[in-house]
Image (cartoon, rainbow, N blue to C red; front, side, top):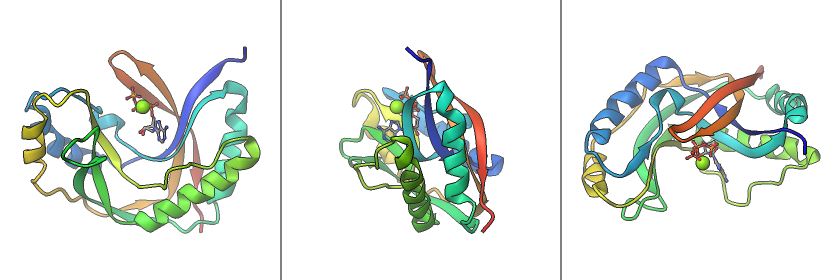
Length: 188
Ligand code: ATP
Ligand code: MG
């Protein structure tokens, strides 16, 4: 069988925003709940999850992404608010939300979906909801105190999105490790 890699397309964050998320995340982690926290340096905004793809297809995927976004105008994103999927009562995923730029991110995800159809990738079935995963709940042990702390407001400074990245994901026992394989720039 051909060698495969696990891949996804996402927006990376500026260091200052990453720092602000770390600052918010630390006290949540300190609650010691049964949550697998995403390493702060790994937090990103997923636009399209591709899953296992043949290594050989990497260049073709990147080319499709470049085509899909090159005529898109760079835009501003502000992160704000936190919550849980499916909800904060019984969360499986804890996330940071988007205040500004949500529509542009949705448009990007649609463009990517469309550009990747000819390569054999299916359109996402669930409607896209832009978010950054902070952690994944393994069991409800200790989670209620984390949820209480998530009443603390979070808002990032605004930042410009002018490129997206193709990432490789290696699922290690200590958590997924992501590597940037390539970049697609928006030129408007
Ligand atoms: P782990 O699976 O070990 O918890 P992870 O979810 O961070 O780690 P991946 O599963 O490789 O790593 O996922 C990479 C990115 O794609 C993450 O942002 C994840 O939320 C997203 N993702 C994963 N699976 C899907 C899916 N089926 N649909 C949409 N997005 C997904
Ligand atoms: Mg996963």
